[in-house]
Image (tube, rainbow, N blue to C red; front, side, top):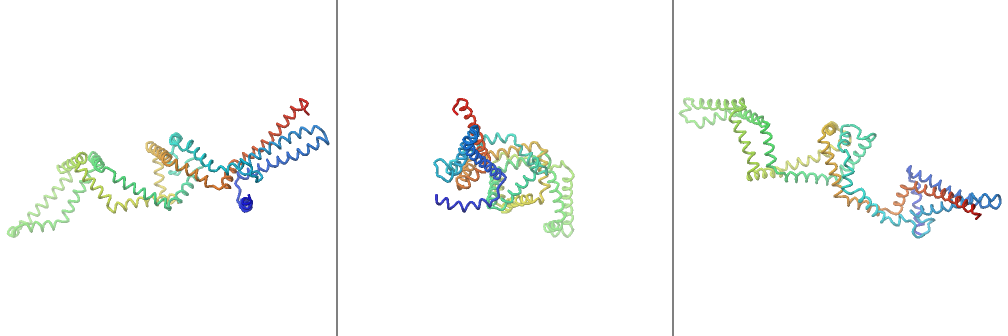
Length: 431
């Protein structure tokens, strides 16, 4: 008791210096009103008791009202006060209920959240009509996600991004993202993917420009390497033939033939060389789908590519670019056109919007399923870690106005019951 009395004077000035919220000011006004009404009833009881003897017996009606109102008001004052502290500082049993029961309150609150809010089924049902895609689309496109909420949403998003962008948690998340990308690449079955890509390219003729480019490259290379080719032909021609310039005529014929062949391939879309290229692609696609040795070869190529340091730097750069883009978006610098286009795409593409909504629902439900117990434990541990002053202040602030209304109602209803009882007794001649 002495320790409690020594602490309180140090804490009260601190509480007085803190600015009161509107809720706290309203509760304070109601507390003054309820306490003033209680004092008024005590004064009315004393005055009416004197007046019954000295002035007029009919003051007994006021006496009955004031007496019952005082009893009711005091009873409710005791009950309300006993929730948060010992009335008048007296250690009366079963008072200061909330400070003494904060561990049970934390467990009960956590259990309430888990049973009524943090179950995957309830969350999934609640999110059935939640249109995350529409909200995101309007926000990214520059519209108002909800009436009057654009600034609030952006402010919250910007604050969250700035808090998380340069924290160890962000670095850990980046490592997980980069590791996840590499794992997905390693787990990806490369042969069917390459086969499908080549098959689509072959069906739509998208490989024709590649062949055209190869033919054009061969022509340019032939022109650039003409001296080397002539020298090679000369070296392989006997000196007797060189004396009669046969080597030069042979080189001219060979180079002219090659140029004519390349020109024919470039000009004829149905040239046999092009057909053989198509056939070679078809054979390779078949091998990719059905031959284990070809599939294993593609897998080795894929793994070697992933192990290449350049790919590691590319993955690292992806995360760095994402962080920079988020930072620019948070600061309102750059990225606006990209985000606007994404928002417009979400608004115009119903299938994309449906996919985003489905992803959002699965993500939230998965978060609740995987981390619901951790969230519940966090709530319980947080409440348990609060000191008695904190939990009392928080709960009293939350329900303070309602508790003062209980005191007011107890005083007025008690007085009304007192008058009613006085009337009943009077009707039977008890007074």
